[in-house]
Image (tube, rainbow, N blue to C red; front, top):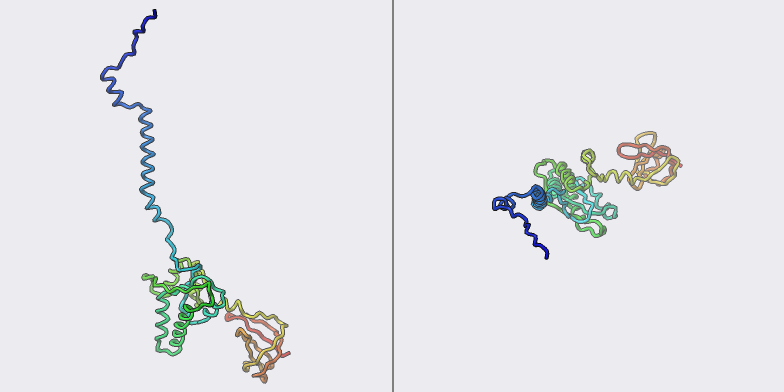
Length: 264
């Protein structure tokens, strides 16, 4: 018959049992610390996420199809923007700020007859641009956004161009230069007009009408279809007639090209 094992594990005393429950082990303490740190990190991400969203880049306005093209006063007064739009060479959204319309209106109310006529033409161009249906890929939008801190219209225009990442359409040389110096996109109608000039080379022949007398050496003067002036030697007596000419020289000037020629 087997003997019963009378050796039993010694139970801790009351004080020792209390220490087991109130004094955690080192391993338990480390595990607890890791869990607390992880939970604090998760809580921090949860509470800061809404604030982080506000640091995202400014939301761009939705005026319509991009690119956005900010219209300068000079373009409306010039008027060539309308046939350019109708030709389909410009697409996107033409944005006309209210302060630009205000400046056009101010010019239209001028006491000077020439300025008044230009201002009225600008107002007419705005109406025709808004009503155009030829170019389905371009829309016109009038906006009331302003830059109260800027006093000059040009400065307001450049500030909006920066805000909306848009190009400026102008015929103002100084505005174009300053805008480009600030890294802005500029569409200068005058640059487009120069690029579209008829290209002639010395020796080329063509027929044109002599419209008036020149200044020197019995010269006559005529114009190409794009308005480029052609000076013709010995054509003073040919005013009002269509003559055959030969291009002899091409002169580049700040205003564009000037052609010299002789009678064929």
